[in-house]
Structure formats: structure tokens, C-alpha cells
Amino acid sequence: MTGPSFDLVAGWAAQGVPLKVAFKGIDRYFERYYAKGPRRRPVKIDFCEADVLDVFDEWRRATGVTGTAELRTENVEPRTPDRGPRTQNQEPGTPNPERRTHSLPAHLERVVTRLTAARAKGSVGDAFDGLIDRTARELDAARADARGLRGAARQALIARLATLDAELLQRAREMLDEDARAQFAREADAELAPFRSGMSPHAFARAQQAAIDRLVRERFNLPTIAY
Image 1 (cartoon, helix red, strand yellow):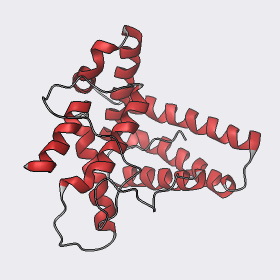
Image 2: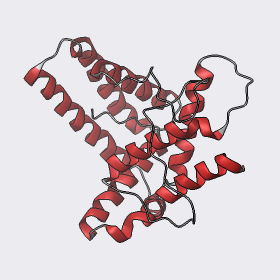
Image 3: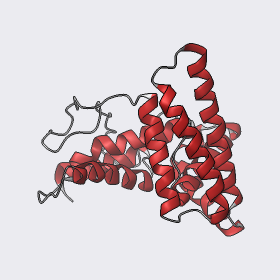
């Protein structure tokens, strides 16, 4: 990797984008790329930039991290996220006109799909199946009504989604052994290292737990149910 592509990736590092976050952004681009059918055209890393920065933004919102890490590479400027993932023929840095904010019904549909996939792939244990089935049934019922919900009813559903999310995540944490917990704590610390000097102990503890929760979700292939 040389030239502008190298500068691009170095810019991610300068901003403190964790390596796993970058990988997830690249995977997200390729999932969308191959969903359109068989492809033979090589994909430049530049085309993955918007997805990487989108995932980085999601990671920062989840952990509460703000700002940019201190630059550790000379002559590298942190890049600013563009307006969204590019399509195959878009040039880097151009906004994607297809990008849309996910609606509540679409969110529920994706969550149910991912819960079903997690169960089918066996990424969770048998003891977890009952909770997933109950959650999926409840979300399926909510999908039928979500499109017409307004005001207090909509807020009540969103609050319920947060409760289900916390319950699912807590059950997943309970399934981890001590070695896995220690490993996730180390990985979370490594992800947060570029930002730690600018965080209070309380903010770091909160960010560390959020980073661990993200790793737990990835371990069991669980979606974020909260909206």
C-alpha cells in the first residue's frame, strides 16, 4: 500500500481508529459490495474509508470517546468523515445519495434477522436460545405496530428495546469465563489507549465497559436491540 492509500490508512491510525474497528468497516463495505452480485473488479482501500469512519463514529458514540487521538505520525492529517458509504463507482470523498437514516421498523427487521442468524449459527449456547426466541417473538410483534406508532407509544417501545438489549447483553456476559473477560478487558484497554490521557477515571471506566460490551456482542454475533 503506497501513496494516497497509505496516507489514508495512516490518517485512520492518527485519529485513533482501533484496528478491529477498521476491519469491521472494511467488512461492511464488502458485505454491501457482494450483496449486489458476483464482482471481479478490484476494490481499493480508499473506497472503504466512509464505512471505516462510520464504524469509528459508532464506536465513539458507544464508548463516549470524543475528539481525536494525538497525532503520532508526522505529516499525517486526520481525515474528516464524508457523508456516508460510497457506491462502487463513487470517488472517495463524495457523498452517497443512497444513504438513509434507518427507520424504527427497518431497525426491528434487522435485529430479528440477526437474532435468528445468531441462533442458527450456534454462536450462542442452548441456554441462551429461550431468551433469543422470546426476544425475537416480541420484536416480531412490535414490527407489526411500529410503523403506525407515535408519541408516547413510540417512546414506550423504544424504552422496551433498551430493556431487552440490556437483558440480552447481561445474559451474554454471564456466559463468559474469566479468561474471556480478562481478554476483552485487555482488548478494550488497547482500543482506548490513544484517548485515555484525556479522559477522567469515571469516563474511562464507562468507555471501557462500553468497549467490552461491543466485544461481547461480536463474540456471540448479537445485534444492538436498543434504538
